[in-house]
Image (cartoon, rainbow, N blue to C red; front, top):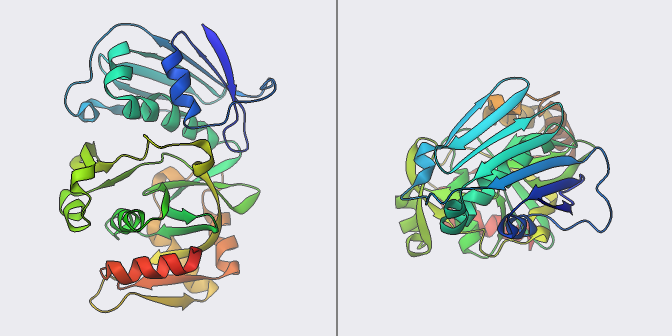
Length: 305
């Protein structure tokens, strides 16, 4: 087993594995460390054994279970992983065929999502939101389930903006404007992919209990595309007919709208309440009429271009 040290945003990680392909996947997520990771680093041990291939839509068989002390995730026959919260460690086994046949899913399942569980209990908070970015900074998009986050993020991506995520993002505990990817992916329903002209560049996916289409963000993944500074936050309002428009919100209105996007997974430590307060004080807006995708994307680009 070989050890390689990495530097996830505001943290340290040591990866131990018997397969160089796992290290190559990690290099697409985080910079390699120039020095020793230190005793308090996240520890990840991944053993590659067996040759089972992924087959069609292996995500259908993906399960997550958790207790206060640990998380477990697996796709039977392909991989199994245990995340120990107290020791900040991850132990997994994975088939060689899974690495070969579905490297993007393997990276999410073995590295990205498990490490995000630990990052969200260390220097970061997990937030239910999407975020798009340019070199100038990022706009956070938050709303309840069905508000249109993924479709708007996909439209912004098609228009040239980068993606931090469509459903989750990490916010630094000591700096509410520092953002990082939790799980950097982009999945949309087939009708949305067709509407946006993305159908031909997507692959079948299974998430949230239904079949969708996934935009491949992993092929060109690089560590520097996984962090950004927040420019502003837009809370998604009614998708009524009419032009997309920004509605300035008072701090109290912002907090009320922000709460509509809350999910149980945010309830770690003090949850997202401190993030909401910091962003409310800085000023935010509600995006109404997001069904006008062209207008909504133009507004997003005006904020970060």
